[in-house]
Amino acid sequence: MKFRPIFVDNTGQELTEHGTDDFPMSMDKQLVSQEHCANVPHWHYEVQIAVVTEGSVMFETPLGSFFVEKGEGIFINSGCPHEIKQTDDENSVYVCVNFNPKMISEGTNSLIRRYYVDPLLTSNDMEVIHLNSTPWHKEICGLLLRMAEIDEAQSYGYEIELKALLCKIWLRLLTNNRGIIENSAPVTFADKQRIRALRQYIHKNYMERISLSDISSAVHISKGECCRIFSRIMHTTPFRYLINYRIAQSLKMLSTTNMSIAEIAQQNGFGSSSYYTECFRKEMNCRPMEYRRHAADSRIRQEKLTTKV
Image 1: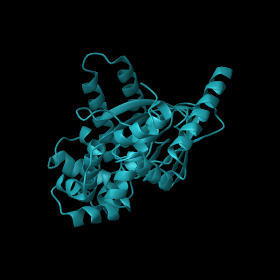
Image 2: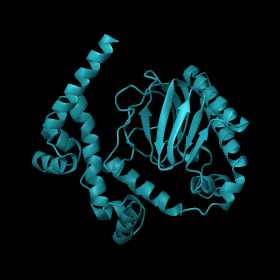
Image 3: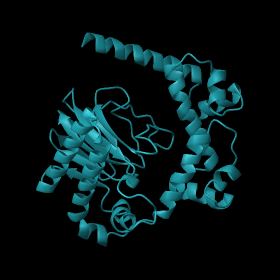
Image 4: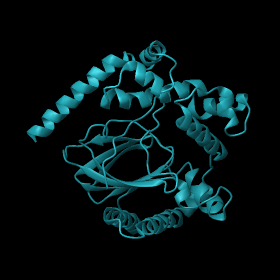
């Protein structure tokens, strides 16, 4: 397992990749004291389940703060905003699985998707679960820790083992919350699917010149409907989302490369460095070079702290 820094766009969506298109899940070992882990409000389409293995971790969510101690875990549903906060335990660690729901069921029209995945994903009462008390809570934590061991070893066929254990965890969530799931008034999942496809198109093509027609055509809807979906779910416009995503991608290049501002602008779909700088200043309240200097200073301070330790 490896540490994955949390990078987000202007909407708070996490940009970190979790798995691949053909195996959309990742097992991560998060060190809370590391840069880009704590104090980064974010959300993601993937479902997350975490278990604290060292110290303690505070998970901030719309439903409140959850103080998760060693051996305890937390379930965070798709699309639920959350933030990691460091506690008095300076060396806290948690392991987590982040997975696309299609790991449980393939195909949008499958029986499993219809009866056992969508109802949990869209339940208003299944946003967050603190896994800290009952036997089934402890069983899920144990299954997740077993997944971490399997992912670490990566023996032949380990992906099948991971999926089998993940399905077992999902079943425990379903069977122990059936009444809540069935009685909860769900939000529409169709819009979630559409906005996901629209974002995916932008994420794959942001380096090119793309128009509203290109974006809407990607999922065979009108330009008006495309704008309405972005407004309804993301509270922004397709164009603004595109600009924000391009800027978010450029942050990595500013922080980790010596590429010129003009090269970064071109790599991220901006027509010129002046237009890139203008958009960057509006969103980040500073110029690209100012952000680069700040990132370099932060990195030097972190290296000095690491050396002292």
